[in-house]
Amino acid sequence: MPTVAEKIIIPSPPEDVWPLLSNPALVASCIPGATLAADQSGGDVWKGSIRVKFGPTVAVFRGEATLSYDHDKRRCTIEGRGIDQRGASRALANGVVAASGTNETELAVEGEYTVTGPLETFANAGGVHVARALLSEFARNMGALVAERRAEDTSADEASAVPAAGVNPASAAASPTARAAPTAPSSASSQPAVPTPPRQAAELNAFALLWAAFKSWLSSLFGKRS
Image (cartoon, rainbow, N blue to C red; front, side, top):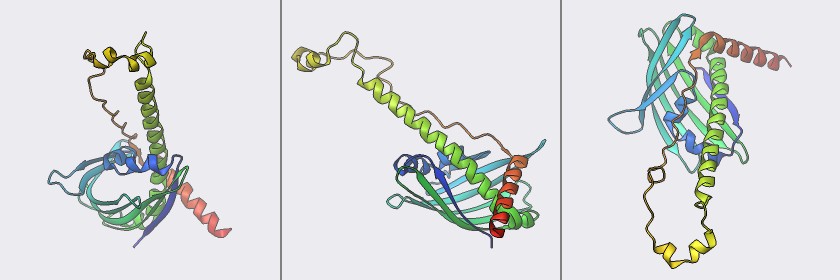
Protein backbone atom coordinates (compact mmCIF):
# COMPACT_ATOMS: atom_id res chain seq x y z
CA MET A 1 0.00 0.00 0.00
CA PRO A 2 1.66 3.30 -1.10
CA THR A 3 2.22 5.88 1.62
CA VAL A 4 2.50 9.66 1.62
CA ALA A 5 4.57 11.60 4.16
CA GLU A 6 5.06 15.24 3.19
CA LYS A 7 5.61 18.59 4.90
CA ILE A 8 4.75 21.92 3.33
CA ILE A 9 5.20 25.48 4.58
CA ILE A 10 2.52 28.17 4.52
CA PRO A 11 4.06 31.61 5.27
CA SER A 12 1.53 32.61 7.95
CA PRO A 13 1.17 31.68 11.64
CA PRO A 14 -1.04 28.69 12.57
CA GLU A 15 -3.60 30.89 14.32
CA ASP A 16 -4.33 32.51 10.93
CA VAL A 17 -4.11 29.32 8.87
CA TRP A 18 -5.95 26.76 11.01
CA PRO A 19 -9.40 28.43 10.90
CA LEU A 20 -9.24 28.24 7.09
CA LEU A 21 -7.92 24.67 7.15
CA SER A 22 -10.89 23.79 9.38
CA ASN A 23 -13.27 24.81 6.58
CA PRO A 24 -13.36 21.96 4.03
CA ALA A 25 -14.97 24.15 1.36
CA LEU A 26 -12.14 26.69 1.63
CA VAL A 27 -9.57 23.89 1.48
CA ALA A 28 -11.20 22.53 -1.68
CA SER A 29 -11.07 26.01 -3.23
CA CYS A 30 -7.26 25.85 -2.98
CA ILE A 31 -7.01 22.49 -4.78
CA PRO A 32 -7.03 22.86 -8.59
CA GLY A 33 -10.19 21.43 -10.14
CA ALA A 34 -11.73 20.34 -6.81
CA THR A 35 -15.25 20.93 -5.47
CA LEU A 36 -16.67 19.89 -2.12
CA ALA A 37 -20.10 19.98 -0.46
CA ALA A 38 -21.41 18.71 2.86
CA ASP A 39 -23.58 15.60 2.84
CA GLN A 40 -27.22 16.69 3.13
CA SER A 41 -27.82 13.96 5.74
CA GLY A 42 -25.50 15.79 8.13
CA GLY A 43 -22.45 14.52 9.98
CA ASP A 44 -18.82 14.89 8.96
CA VAL A 45 -19.13 13.39 5.47
CA TRP A 46 -18.26 15.63 2.53
CA LYS A 47 -18.90 14.75 -1.11
CA GLY A 48 -16.73 16.13 -3.86
CA SER A 49 -15.10 15.77 -7.23
CA ILE A 50 -11.94 16.75 -9.04
CA ARG A 51 -11.61 17.58 -12.74
CA VAL A 52 -8.38 16.67 -14.50
CA LYS A 53 -7.77 18.01 -17.99
CA PHE A 54 -5.80 15.84 -20.42
CA GLY A 55 -5.50 18.18 -23.41
CA PRO A 56 -9.01 18.37 -24.96
CA THR A 57 -10.30 15.56 -22.70
CA VAL A 58 -11.62 16.18 -19.19
CA ALA A 59 -11.81 13.36 -16.63
CA VAL A 60 -13.92 13.66 -13.47
CA PHE A 61 -13.29 11.69 -10.30
CA ARG A 62 -16.04 11.66 -7.66
CA GLY A 63 -15.89 10.56 -4.04
CA GLU A 64 -16.55 11.36 -0.42
CA ALA A 65 -14.46 11.98 2.68
CA THR A 66 -15.11 11.77 6.40
CA LEU A 67 -13.31 14.53 8.32
CA SER A 68 -12.63 14.52 12.07
CA TYR A 69 -11.05 17.61 13.67
CA ASP A 70 -9.05 18.01 16.88
CA HIS A 71 -8.90 21.80 17.12
CA ASP A 72 -6.77 21.82 20.29
CA LYS A 73 -4.01 19.86 18.55
CA ARG A 74 -4.74 21.36 15.13
CA ARG A 75 -5.11 17.93 13.56
CA CYS A 76 -7.54 16.52 11.04
CA THR A 77 -8.11 12.83 10.33
CA ILE A 78 -9.37 11.98 6.85
CA GLU A 79 -10.91 8.82 5.42
CA GLY A 80 -11.89 8.95 1.78
CA ARG A 81 -12.94 6.90 -1.20
CA GLY A 82 -13.51 7.72 -4.84
CA ILE A 83 -14.34 6.38 -8.27
CA ASP A 84 -13.74 7.78 -11.74
CA GLN A 85 -16.73 8.77 -13.85
CA ARG A 86 -16.50 5.61 -15.95
CA GLY A 87 -16.38 3.38 -12.89
CA ALA A 88 -13.17 1.70 -14.03
CA SER A 89 -10.86 2.76 -11.19
CA ARG A 90 -11.53 3.01 -7.47
CA ALA A 91 -9.47 4.52 -4.67
CA LEU A 92 -9.37 4.36 -0.87
CA ALA A 93 -7.28 6.68 1.28
CA ASN A 94 -6.78 7.66 4.90
CA GLY A 95 -4.44 10.11 6.56
CA VAL A 96 -3.75 12.79 9.14
CA VAL A 97 -3.03 16.47 8.54
CA ALA A 98 -1.40 18.44 11.38
CA ALA A 99 -0.50 22.14 11.57
CA SER A 100 2.30 23.47 13.76
CA GLY A 101 4.76 26.36 13.96
CA THR A 102 5.01 29.92 15.25
CA ASN A 103 5.57 32.60 12.61
CA GLU A 104 4.77 30.23 9.75
CA THR A 105 2.73 27.06 9.50
CA GLU A 106 4.28 23.68 8.86
CA LEU A 107 1.64 21.34 7.48
CA ALA A 108 2.48 17.66 7.95
CA VAL A 109 0.54 15.20 5.80
CA GLU A 110 0.78 11.46 6.45
CA GLY A 111 -1.38 8.76 4.95
CA GLU A 112 -1.76 5.75 2.71
CA TYR A 113 -3.91 4.85 -0.26
CA THR A 114 -4.89 2.03 -2.60
CA VAL A 115 -6.06 2.28 -6.21
CA THR A 116 -7.59 -0.56 -8.23
CA GLY A 117 -8.38 -0.66 -11.93
CA PRO A 118 -6.59 0.84 -14.96
CA LEU A 119 -4.97 3.60 -12.86
CA GLU A 120 -3.46 1.19 -10.32
CA THR A 121 -0.02 0.90 -11.97
CA PHE A 122 0.29 4.65 -12.43
CA ALA A 123 -0.88 5.36 -8.86
CA ASN A 124 1.55 2.89 -7.35
CA ALA A 125 4.49 4.19 -9.39
CA GLY A 126 3.88 7.94 -9.37
CA GLY A 127 1.05 8.68 -6.97
CA VAL A 128 3.36 10.01 -4.26
CA HIS A 129 4.96 12.49 -6.67
CA VAL A 130 1.56 13.63 -7.95
CA ALA A 131 0.46 14.17 -4.34
CA ARG A 132 3.63 16.17 -3.68
CA ALA A 133 2.97 18.40 -6.69
CA LEU A 134 -0.67 18.92 -5.63
CA LEU A 135 0.36 19.80 -2.07
CA SER A 136 2.83 22.36 -3.38
CA GLU A 137 0.10 24.03 -5.45
CA PHE A 138 -2.27 23.87 -2.48
CA ALA A 139 0.28 25.58 -0.21
CA ARG A 140 0.66 28.48 -2.66
CA ASN A 141 -3.09 28.94 -2.97
CA MET A 142 -3.72 28.67 0.77
CA GLY A 143 -0.95 31.19 1.50
CA ALA A 144 -2.55 33.64 -0.93
CA LEU A 145 -5.99 33.08 0.64
CA VAL A 146 -4.68 33.71 4.17
CA ALA A 147 -3.00 36.95 3.05
CA GLU A 148 -6.21 38.05 1.29
CA ARG A 149 -8.37 37.40 4.37
CA ARG A 150 -5.88 39.22 6.61
CA ALA A 151 -5.99 42.27 4.31
CA GLU A 152 -9.81 42.23 4.39
CA ASP A 153 -9.81 42.11 8.22
CA THR A 154 -7.30 44.98 8.41
CA SER A 155 -9.39 47.14 6.06
CA ALA A 156 -12.53 46.44 8.10
CA ASP A 157 -10.77 47.36 11.38
CA GLU A 158 -9.43 50.60 9.89
CA ALA A 159 -12.87 51.54 8.53
CA SER A 160 -14.57 50.97 11.89
CA ALA A 161 -11.95 53.11 13.67
CA VAL A 162 -12.49 56.20 11.48
CA PRO A 163 -14.85 58.73 13.21
CA ALA A 164 -17.65 60.48 11.33
CA ALA A 165 -16.62 63.62 9.43
CA GLY A 166 -16.63 66.79 11.55
CA VAL A 167 -17.07 64.93 14.85
CA ASN A 168 -14.52 65.19 17.63
CA PRO A 169 -14.30 61.68 19.14
CA ALA A 170 -13.48 63.01 22.63
CA SER A 171 -16.36 65.53 22.74
CA ALA A 172 -18.77 63.03 21.26
CA ALA A 173 -17.95 60.51 23.96
CA ALA A 174 -18.34 63.11 26.73
CA SER A 175 -21.62 64.61 25.53
CA PRO A 176 -24.78 63.07 27.06
CA THR A 177 -26.78 64.37 24.10
CA ALA A 178 -24.47 62.63 21.67
CA ARG A 179 -24.69 59.41 23.65
CA ALA A 180 -28.47 59.51 23.79
CA ALA A 181 -29.14 60.62 20.23
CA PRO A 182 -30.44 57.83 18.02
CA THR A 183 -28.35 56.87 15.07
CA ALA A 184 -29.97 57.14 11.67
CA PRO A 185 -29.95 53.84 9.85
CA SER A 186 -27.53 53.55 7.01
CA SER A 187 -27.95 51.13 4.15
CA ALA A 188 -24.20 50.57 4.09
CA SER A 189 -23.52 50.18 7.82
CA SER A 190 -26.72 48.31 8.76
CA GLN A 191 -25.92 45.35 6.55
CA PRO A 192 -23.88 42.54 8.16
CA ALA A 193 -20.43 42.01 6.76
CA VAL A 194 -20.37 39.25 4.18
CA PRO A 195 -17.03 37.43 3.84
CA THR A 196 -15.62 37.34 0.36
CA PRO A 197 -16.24 33.87 -1.12
CA PRO A 198 -13.08 31.97 -2.04
CA ARG A 199 -11.95 31.97 -5.63
CA GLN A 200 -11.80 28.49 -7.07
CA ALA A 201 -8.31 27.34 -8.00
CA ALA A 202 -7.62 26.97 -11.70
CA GLU A 203 -8.63 23.69 -13.33
CA LEU A 204 -6.05 20.98 -12.93
CA ASN A 205 -3.96 20.43 -16.06
CA ALA A 206 -2.67 16.88 -15.96
CA PHE A 207 0.33 17.60 -18.19
CA ALA A 208 1.51 20.45 -15.97
CA LEU A 209 0.91 18.31 -12.88
CA LEU A 210 2.74 15.33 -14.33
CA TRP A 211 5.69 17.57 -15.22
CA ALA A 212 5.81 18.81 -11.63
CA ALA A 213 5.55 15.22 -10.42
CA PHE A 214 8.36 14.19 -12.77
CA LYS A 215 10.60 16.91 -11.36
CA SER A 216 9.69 15.73 -7.86
CA TRP A 217 10.68 12.17 -8.82
CA LEU A 218 14.01 13.37 -10.25
CA SER A 219 14.69 15.36 -7.09
CA SER A 220 14.05 12.34 -4.88
CA LEU A 221 16.13 10.11 -7.18
CA PHE A 222 19.23 12.34 -7.10
CA GLY A 223 18.66 12.97 -3.41
CA LYS A 224 18.96 9.26 -2.71
CA ARG A 225 22.12 8.97 -4.78
CA SER A 226 23.78 11.82 -2.92
